[in-house]
Structure formats: C-alpha cells, structure tokens
Length: 108
Image (cartoon, rainbow, N blue to C red; front, side, top):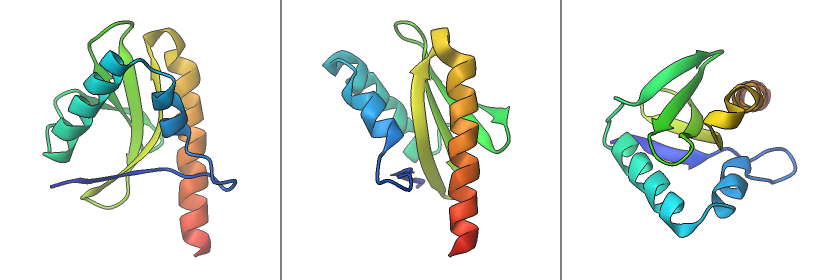
C-alpha cells in the first residue's frame, strides 16, 4: 500500500488542497477515486514530467492532472493539481515545490 501525503510549504499552505477545495463535488470525487487507485499501486495513468515529478492523468472534463513526487518507495507527496489547459505552468510549479520539499528535507 502506498501512503499519500500533501506537501505543506514553509508558510503552512497546502497547494494541492487549495486547488482541490476550488473544484465541484463531482470532480473532487473523481480525484478521490484516482488517489485511491494510486494508493493501491495502480500507476497506469502516471508518467514522469521530469525533475522527480510525476503526473497522474484523470480523463474527465478538461483533463485534470495531479502532480506528485516519490519520497522513498511507498510515500507519495502531493504537490499541486491542475488541468490540461495550464499543464506546462502546473508542471513548472510542481517542479519548484518538489525542489523546495527536497531542500527542506536535507536541512532536517
């Protein structure tokens, strides 16, 4: 079983949760289903977008995307979500958040 946690930035904000809270209930349900599949090890909709960041595609609506990084073999850190329309912007943001996560982890 894969453990999923949300990234929390230095100011205590959770970018993924902020994104999720802005979605309607139907989309939130689809995201929850995608995360449940990820927890069980279903990686069929996951691909690398570089710099240690992975993209989980949800084929619904405008093409929702979840961005995360692996912290070890069984721990996923959710970074941010988005959709196909802003994909490149979201990927860049996810990469920046992932670099910050790794830097803070090294500081500890």
